Amino acid sequence: MDFFSVHILGCGSARPTGRHKPACQVISLRGKLFMIDCGEAAQMAFNRQGLNLSRLGHIFISHNHGDHVFGLPGLISTMALLGRTAELHIHAPKELRAYLDVVERLYCEGIDYKITFHEVDTKSHQIIFEDRSIKVWSIPLSHRIPTCGYLFCENTGLPHIKREMIDAYNIPVSQINNIKAGAGWTAEDGQVLTHEMLTTPPTPPRQFAYCSDTIFRPELSEMVKGVDLLFHEATYPESLLYRAKQTYHSTAREAAEVAKKAQAKKLCIGHFSARIYDEESLLKEAKDVFQNTVLANEGLRIDL
Amino acid sequence: MDFFSVHILGCGSARPTGRHKPACQVISLRGKLFMIDCGEAAQMAFNRQGLNLSRLGHIFISHNHGDHVFGLPGLISTMALLGRTAELHIHAPKELRAYLDVVERLYCEGIDYKITFHEVDTKSHQIIFEDRSIKVWSIPLSHRIPTCGYLFCENTGLPHIKREMIDAYNIPVSQINNIKAGAGWTAEDGQVLTHEMLTTPPTPPRQFAYCSDTIFRPELSEMVKGVDLLFHEATYPESLLYRAKQTYHSTAREAAEVAKKAQAKKLCIGHFSARIYDEESLLKEAKDVFQNTVLANEGLRIDL
Image 1 (cartoon, rainbow over the protein chains, first blue to last red):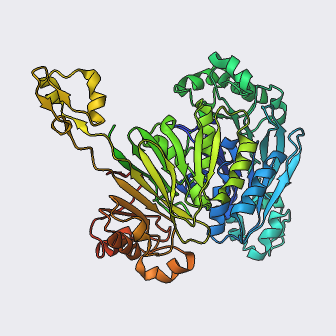
Image 2 (cartoon, rainbow over the protein chains, first blue to last red):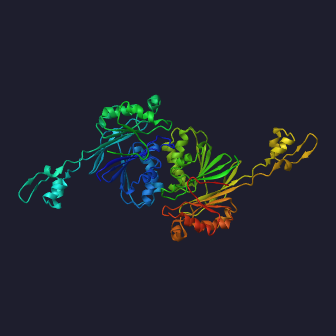
């Protein structure tokens, strides 16, 4: 249960193609699922990946363009049909609310769970959600409408128990939570076993940043410093830079510049324009700047 | 170009499964496309079938349940992205209008084509659309909300020219339209060639009826008398008749009863419940009553 994975369910841009579906990703962390963006047919992709809808409690929407939200009505309906009762939280720029309101009014009569809308301020970099496992920060982006990315920072976990020490010194199971929380143990013969002798350090906390859609903003790197994985949109190749600027998108080279400046450990590029067939050249372009880059693809899972 | 085909793009019910997608069909008639219902991901299925969006001018919606309409926002957006300028006509019960209005207001700013909404009276059986090729009738159905099916009646075409007669008597090409319209021809030697000598009769007009979603209504058969193909929903097997009645759906046997009473030439059953894995038993159940039955399936094309 100690994994932190990012599932790519859709990584195309506005117009779906035979190659790519609209934007949607799912983070799986310690048994919980978090969705980022919800393009059309997200629920089908979710199902295909073998993910469990009942583990999904929070959806984070970057901005109110159709290719990032048209999967919400179907997902919400299916959750109701499956008998969901747990609250569903949707975090999004305020522009989404009008759409959700009409979907709830027209199609959600009698559903047995509550949908709570959390308005995200797209202009500030702040913690917008936290629980025992994670903190989620908003990342202001620059697109044609108010847009923000999200930074998922795992909380530091507890140290790991050395099983062999527990066995060797006959330490009662009832003491394990105390030891994880910092305690040591005194053995029957009076030997003092320190906390450090009984445990190994916790897994270092992992971080994932999602930046889509956005025009090139090198200053983003400050907010995503040192992340284990950066997803950054790369709608166009550098040869279509004018088009990227026009439409407030980025090129593959620009995505790599952000990753390099941020000293990210890994970069995943996506949100590919329907016009782009040669994704390998996007990859090459990014790798020339930041070597550890991969292309997003439907069904790809990246383990942090 | 003289074909009349029905493409099944989705034939599941409310909850999509790995086996079936939400409701959507496309009729291809003499080079034009007509869509019936537009469940989530309809545009992807449309694309996968190699159909051409620019040939689609009319969409007919049976009722305002999500699994029949959640594909509209994406389809409308994609048409705009492809540079559509031709008007798009959506025929539907009035309940859909509020959803379309908000989709247009929030997601269609600056699109270059007009969307015209035509309210369909779900209580009357009447012609709701006609052009040179076709007449479309509404078929009142009984579901939990106002719902209607559609009957597509091809207009009688023109007679076919006997190519060999044209060649043998050196009849000028300029006369062909006159002859098709009913004229004969007098040859150079004075021989009178009647219209009947120069032509073979037009292809008999074909009819397709779409009845979904509905509880069993044997009187439907009067409105779909003698159709070449009847699509009738069969959400459940007869063993779940109580559930069909509860939810205003039909069983496979009931669908077949309508086809038999209507003396339809062929029956296609679909709108399968997500709970039903054994579709062969649905087929058997229907065939026991009406032999010429087929199961709907994504990608199936039936030529009339």
